[in-house]
Image (cartoon, rainbow, N blue to C red; front, side):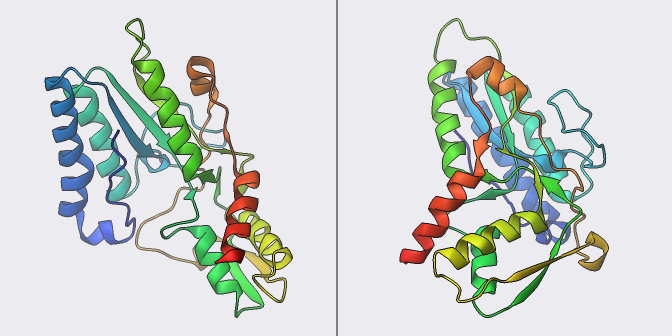
Length: 239
């Protein structure tokens, strides 16, 4: 199970060699090793392999079209994995958050403690995904693919539900932070267009991933990000 990746989306635009070494070449090495030892290879990928401009949630069969180095290097890793190890599962996810490491939820909580208002992008949509639910999904998949009759190899999507934009997600975080006593005030979120928050790497307007296939094959339902957010904010309040 490979969860390693170069994930600094903006820095990748100026550090493409390193991004490709990790996201393509490193993946190829692991996939070849898996094939050599007749193992199955499970690999985490991203919504950034898509252009992010269609209206509907992306299905696994939809055309890819990354707009930046990070997405292109991750797509190259998907291709390398599939070529090197036929018995592979590529799990695309998006908007990952958790109690540990750097992520949107922890950043919002930190900023809210001394700010009464925050401007957050409101025209990018996706499904926030709890890291713990990704781990649970991978463990379930690992058990299923060890069945000698399993043959549904390939790409799957797994994200949280319901879909929301970044500003809406931030509002949910602020409400919980206030109720749990992390902040002494309810921080106001002002939705802004992406054009007001330029970044070196373009972000997808649509990061919504359709998760029907993973439910059909593995019985896995989309991550409940609202329940996970409750737990994480409560945990942060105790730190």
